[in-house]
Amino acid sequence: MVLPFTTRVDISEDTVPVRRQVVIVGGGPVGMALALDLGLRGVSCVVLERRTGLSTIPKGQGLSQRTMEHFAGWGLEQQLRDARAMPHDHPIGQVTVYRDLLSEFWQAAPARELVAPFYARANERLPQYRTEEVLRRRVAALPHVEVHLGCRVTDVTQDRLGVRVRTVHGEDDEVFEADYVVGCDGGHSVVREQADIPRSGTDFDELVALVVFRSAELHAALERFPERSTYRVMHPALKGYWMFFGRVDVGEEFFFHAPVPAGSTVEDYDFLALLHRAAGFVFDATIDHVGFWDLRVQVAHEYRAGRAFIAGDAAHTHPPYGGFGLNNGLEDAVNLSWKLAAVLHGWGGEELLRSYSSERQAVFRDVGEDIIGGWIRDDRAILEAHDPEVDRPAFERAFAELAAGFGRRLRSFEPNYEGSPVVCGPPGGTNSGHGTHDVRARSGHHLAPLPSSAGGTTFDALGRDFTLLALDADDADVASFQRAAQDAGVPLTVVVDTRTGGREAYGAPLVLVRPDQFVAWVGHAAPDDAAALLRHVVGHG
Image (cartoon, rainbow, N blue to C red; front, side):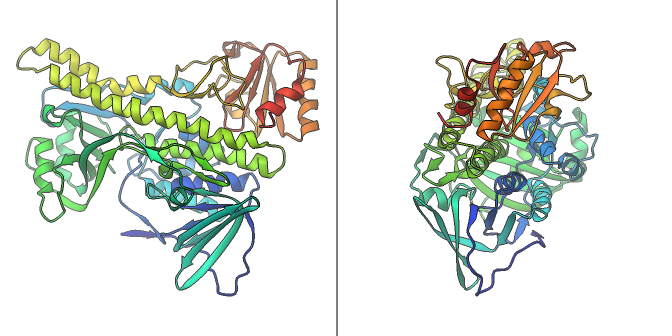
C-alpha cells in the first residue's frame, strides 16, 4: 500500500533543461531534508525520486533529540509531533526481556532521557512515512525546490563545470544539470556506484525477518510491563542478536524483527510461530507484511567524489538497532547543506566541502563497528557467561547491565569534529562518534542549550548561519568579529548576554557557532587576526 503524494511535477517533452545548483537523487527523508534545508538557504535544487507514493511499512521510527532540533529549526516541530501514531502521552522507551515476553526477568532501563539535558528538544517516535509526509508538504511550498516523482536515474556524469543527471520518466529521457549532485538514494545508490565510491564493513551473516502485524491480544499481554514503545527479547540461543517487538500505534499494530534461517522465504517459513516463540504464548495476529534484511554494517570510504556527494543509506547502512540510521542520515543532510550553500553563495571555501566526508564518515564508522557491533558482542558475551538456573544473583546483575547497554552507549555517543579542517580543535583532535556530553563549549562539539536571559535558551537564539555568543565579552572583541564577517561576506548573528544565570558553564565569554550548531571556536578574547580565524572556519584555509 502507498500513500498518495499530490505535489508531483510533470515533465513535458518540450521542457528546456534548466540548470539548478544541486540535484538530489532520492526523495526519502534524507533527500527531502536536504532539499528543505537547501531551499530555506535560497539554493535552487531538484529532487529526483523513483517512487510516486510513500510505503506504509513502519521503519525509522525513533527520532533523537538532535533530529528534533533540526525539525524545530525548519519550523516543523509541532507538525511532526502532531503526526505521531501513538497517543501523545505514551512514553517512548524500551523493555528488555530474557527468552520471551512472559519471562520473570525483564528491565525497563533509561536510555535517551539520559542525554536529554544536552539537547534543546525532546525526542519523538512515529513511522518514517509520517515523517516523510511532513517533509514533503513543507518542501512543496518552497520556491527554490522542485520535486520530480517517478524518475529513475540512469546516468550521472561530471566535469570541472558541473554535473549531468539523466533520468527515465515514463517513456521520456530527461537530463538535469547542476553544480553538484547528492545521492540520497539508499543502499543501492546509483550515485555512489557511478562515482565509484567503495564501501566496506562487517557482515554478521544473519538473515533477519521484518513482520508487520496487528494483534489486540498482544497489546493486552504487554500491560504486564510499564508503558513503553519497544520490547527487546534476548534469547541465549541467538548469540546476542535480538527478537524485537515495536509499537506502531497503541492498541493493535506492531512490527517485529528476528533472525531466521538463511534462505527463508515468505512462502516456506512459519512467521506466526516465530512471533509466538518470541512472545512465549500463542496469540491471534493478522500479518500484513513480511520482508527480509541482511544483518551487516557497510560504510563508504569517502562521502564525496568530485562534485558528487552521498548521504544517508547511500553512505552507510547498518542493522536497525537504536535508531542510528535515519538520525545519522538527517545529520548528514544538515552538515552538507550549509556547506554547499556557503560555497554556492560565495562565502564558503573548498575546504568546507572536503570537511563533509571527514566529519561524517568518521562518526558512522564508529556507530557501525563500535556502537552497534560492540553492542551485539557485549550482549552475546553476557548471555554466554550467565544462566539464571546456575547462578541467579549473578545473572540478575549481568542482565541489568545488558538492559542498560543502550543507555550506556547513548551516553558515549557524542559525535564531534575535533579533527575537522574547518574547526579550531585541540592539538591532535580527531573526528569521532565517541565523546562525552558536557555543557562546556568545546570546539568541534554540539552546543548544549543553556538558559537565556531573554527567555528560552541560548540554542533558540542562534542564527541560521554563523553565530557569535558574546557573554560579557569586550565590545572591541565583538567588533573585530563583526568587521571580519562583513569584509568576508560571512553572515554572522551576534547574541549578547551575560555570563551569569547558568551561562558561565560554557567556560568562555566568546563562542563561535557554525550553522549546524557545532562550535567552531571558543575564546576568552578575540584572536589577533579575527579575519584569519573566520577564513579558516569557512573553508578558505
